[in-house]
Length: 299
Image (tube, rainbow, N blue to C red; front, side, top):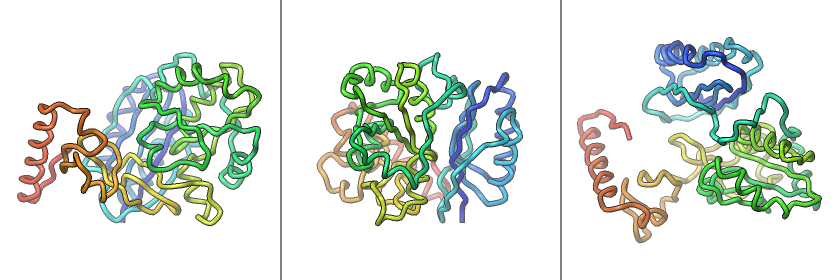
């Protein structure tokens, strides 16, 4: 059984590069795999490993400057979620491209999962999904607005083009684990919007705490690991990943025109060149050879 920890924390690291190697060494020492991003603004990522390993890594992160009150979300899996451990240095731990945005200064009002349904059911509240289009495509809250962005960095431009739609409305936003809303709510406050709310702990916390019979969530939630999607109770969903475009698909989509294992699906078959597809086919061939040898080919 693997313990999964999804975490983020905003803190001002004066020398983030100095934190990278010790953290990577600790993860490798304790058989923890996944991805952690470090920037001057904090840390973000998902890791998985044995219970003792996750405990050791969490304790280390909580010892970093300003991280003593780190919160994280846990779940479990029976199969490995990651093939290796990566600790990467980034300009932002979630990329919005807005240098004036500072979640440490101020963010929107947190709303606990138990209170979320009442908030988003109000007529004076507009509910906005801050995730990317491929994430929204497999599940969202009933009635939520989909900005149809391909990356989080497109959100400010979308807001500027659509802000008049929300005159005299309170804004409630949500994302997978909460990190994007830390920035998007601060951004809206900077744009003069005072009544801004966001789901504390994100969709994952909502699905963990709210039973299906009381839920306003429809579908599954995309996650950035080998589970691909989760549902209520954080149970693994039915989706798999198209390794041509990294979008989630259902097993039945393998029967649709355009699908080729590891190469393309109905969503991306016309988006990649024949050269791209040949590279993907070679990757599939190498994966098959690695499997025959009893080793793992890293995608």
